[in-house]
Amino acid sequence: MNTTWSRFNVTSIVLGFAFLYLPIVLLIVFSFNESKLVTVWGGFSTRWYVSLFHNQGLMDATWVTARVGVISATVATVLGTLAALTLTRYTRFRGRLLFSGMVFAPLVMPEVITGLSLLLLFVAIGLDRGFLTVTLAHITLTMCFVAVVVQSRLVSFDRSLEEAAMDLGATPVKTFFQITLPVIMPAIVSGWMLAFTLSLDDLVIASFTSGPGATTLPMKIYSQVRLGVTPEINAACTILIAVVAVGVIIASVANKRREVQRQLDERAAQRG
Amino acid sequence: MSNAAVTAASAPATNAGKSIVARLGAAFVGRLVIIIPYVWLLFFFLIPFIIVFKISLSQTAIAMPPYTPVLGFNDGISGFFAGFGALNFDNYAWLTQDALYFNAYVTSVIIAAISTVLTLIVGYPIAYGMARAPATIRPTLLMLVILPFWTSFLIRVYAWIGILKPEGLLNQLLLATGVISQPLIILNTYTAIFIGIVYSYLPFMVLPLYSSLEKMDYSLIEAAKDLGCPPTSAFWKITFPLSLPGVIAGCLLVFIPAVGEFVIPDLLGGSQTLMIGKTLWNEFFANRDWPVSSAVAVILLLLLTVPIVLFQRAQARAQEQDK
Image (cartoon, rainbow over all chains, first blue to last red; front, side, top):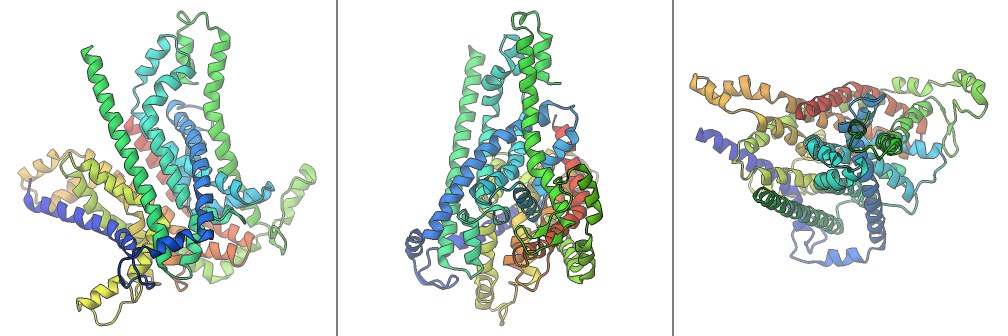
């Protein structure tokens, strides 16, 4: 291969990743800044983390966000997996075009539109804005992301496994739980994590659909950011990043281990 | 018809004992797989749009909720049809009278278009480099592109405030190295919005580009080179056309949400910049004018219908190819 091209490749990757990561790294570094001025280095300190844990409003918001995230991600994973099954397994039924449209459109729909429309729905059916409405809104948004992730796994799924199970007398339901589900499990797990982080992350839809007593962490961070950049917010962001990073690393290690195990099993099966 | 049910039905010899009941049960479960997500999306995605449309035709009122209901079923079907007479297009008329809204739509589309091109220019070399990297490190590179996507959008936008503000890190660096003598004003300008959109949406551009570039057969480039084609023209004649599906998917994934973006123009663009997502937000939260914000949303949705349909078709085509 031509060396100038590969030097170009390496340069573009390095520059690209620097662009992607530098702002996050700087944010984390300055969360340990002693000085109250966020962008002037005044020595290492963890005082902002300490004051963070004494900020009751922020702590309450964290708790709300975590509960909304876990509940909505779990329900969204079930619904999204069903939607993915529908998209890949049922190629012909009335209203399929509308269905696939409803699954793909929320992925790109501007959040202000989704948020406003959901709020107007909740008002129309007389549901008080609060914890429940945010959770319902997040389920609707994130189930579509889960559907896309699970669908991509289902497309490459070897159907002969299911057929073999059913030829051997397993019912379709049993086949699903014993054959299909274990195979698509990695995609379901990453779908859940994606749904959880999207819920953790969402400001716009939560602002529209949330009510008093259900302020989420992004809403809290946003209202403080509007008043100016503070090291305390940097600290809160760093903790959020750390939680997500640890989760992603654990998931990818677990995934890798499962993959290795699967290869070992396959080899053993071939030998035996 | 469910495939599972077909298989169950086509094996009556082995499953003769499990009669009609089991088969009906299977068919019912198969239907439920469709019905549950379908009904959910109808109720929480489609019907809300109809309500938005309905409220955009109602009048603003000082009440809670702050609008006069139209097209209700309270008076039965006849009342519903009589309601058509009371429909009110003032909110749409208002959008055309006040130049603010028109400018906000136009500016949003232009900003989104420019940002999309910039994201493509920044993202293409990264995707290209990744696709030609040794196969062993490609999964790691891929994970590194996806990882920032997992960290909060709000946080990533917030991180740029500290970098771009007049006394921020970028100006400190440039002043210290003597590149500039006066701090640059970047925060609260359109430049900051461009930077924010390119930064936040970069993974959405890189991933589809990478997946189409990775599938490409590089022996084509080798062949072109052997036949004396210079690298630049080989790129424009072979690589770029072959990566076009990725380019289209990436551009739509950036452009559509960028038009209605709220967080980036609000935090990085300041009060001087005009974008429709921010206008809708202000109309709703500051002015509490629900009918006008609904009308803004309806027009925005109409504006985005064509790109959204294109996106859905691209998705469907990609899905067919994978099969």
